[in-house]
Image 1 (cartoon, rainbow, N blue to C red):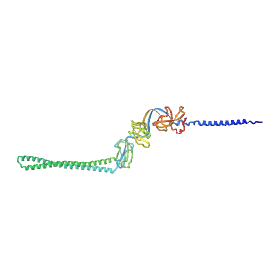
Image 2: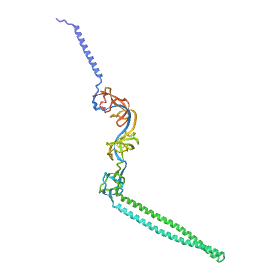
Image 3: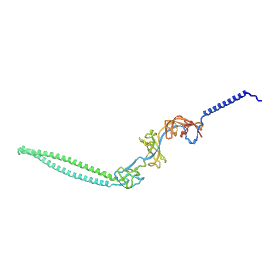
Length: 417
């Protein structure tokens, strides 16, 4: 017969309660422990990131940009008068001399105007010659009159002297002396008048000839202009070089100022480099530059900086020095690098995919084992084409990831595999 034991039942209940409490406490502790654990760092393929060491030494600051080779001297040949293109004598690419005729134009009006100007000049020159002959004849007549008056004047003076001596000796009456003296005074006045008339005639002759010479000069200038216009129908290169372009064809009518052709000197080239406007502030005249023609490197110096910004870029002219690489020719695409300055004992590394100069960015720095990388704040300084100065946050020898890590912005640590 079983005997009921109430104490035994209570003991079992207490044990059950203790077990339940212990289980709850254990589950709570386990949950708290799990929640306090840091998430595992994301895995990143080592081959998919760009890793560079931090170096110390000479830091060459430079800027880079694309560009083209252009001739230093280009002559654009424009039409001086309207006309019809009769013939294209030289094709683009040919070497030409300054007097080489490239095109031949025709314009009957210009030809007729040149003939009219020539006839007008000949007529003016003939009139000048005729006027000169007539005025010289008048001058000769005036000189003859003066000579006659001078002879009469001198004769009258001699007669006065003779009569004065005769009157003194009583051989002639005084009235005869008075009459000879009066006649001598009249001849003196007449002689003075004729002299003044000769001077005025000479001055008048000079003035009339000056007027006619001015007319002749005017006609000669007009004839020169018409001749130049006629000569411009034979379009010449004007400089030695290579004919780069012929902008018209036979049968085409052109107007004054129309672009006909372009001649350049291919042995004197410069590079026009387009530098981003944010990088152009430190460029100065005279800085050293290197031009990559893809067939060699040409040395040069900055010659001119365009003051205007065009489509986000500044045009920098680089004067090339020394021999040019083979294949260098006008309009060739090139890459230019301009040296801004050389800095000694600078901490630097490769330029990251993001981050501007003189700013602070976050970069992943590899740990000692090389398996993990931790994000650290880095202050950047001055920049170059592919490198940038490290102001703080990194030390010499550190390995940093420079590729874009935006996909790991939420992680402070990554694992490389």
